[in-house]
Length: 384
Ligand code: FEO
Image (cartoon, rainbow, N blue to C red; front, side, top):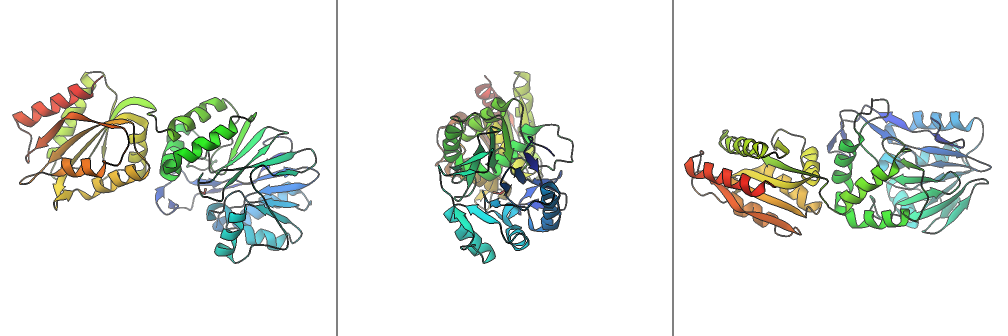
């Protein structure tokens, strides 16, 4: 794939991975992107996952067409991008490797080498002249690891954004909706680091960017304001859309009945509503949807004086990603000592700027007149 006249794509598609990073379902596979800039000096930008070393090395060799790579630029040391460094450096023994100081420490820790005899340590503001292209390096700590550098090519106005602007899904699967899988990827993997993403967006806003080359997902060339705008929304923890997500667990279907009634009531009031059964859904999707909408209802059962396990996991995943700035309603169920609402509220107490509804629905085993009235009151409060 040609990105610009001098920038070529040499990444790989992964359809073997079952869980990306050991936890994310990727039914449409994954990409490990890598790029070659073919100039007076040649540079290869990042490597590929360990299962694709040979395919990636072949891609690099094909694009270089007999030339030797002068530089290997390592922007990020997570093994989905760094696992082929040693094979590359063994194959191309004249190549100089560039990375941040912390990346070289990680390289030694992961692979036993830090190439002290043929390396350049880069930091924010450093640049590399390739001839026609001049690369400048921008520190992007915690987007998504502390050693990350992103790279700007002023000649072709390309930002190599490391994990930023990535998404789940391989490039040989038809792209239908960038936003949903990019959101699930972003919230899941980088969501905790909104402040650091904001810092990177601020630095990027000073650059004239016409193409974004991430380490996952498609190269972005059109309408970059759309993608940057979404990153700004996500990283500042603002809701992306108006709507109510109802995330629930239900053991015998009674809590589910309350959830269904609430959804009906809200829809009747013209609200967008999504209902997710936390015991049966992709948890990463459920988390990302909570960050999408401006209102969240949590409905669960009291369980071992706590709450149902998948709800506990869900709230933990929300709070560790700094869930905030939302309106929250609670539905609890309990057959002898209902405490779920108090437990959920306590788990959320460190979250910033959450507004709890006045109404909390209390179900004592099954819905009755009182709890049905509470569901209706909750819908009234949540509706805009
Ligand atoms: Fe795609 Fe943080 O590695």
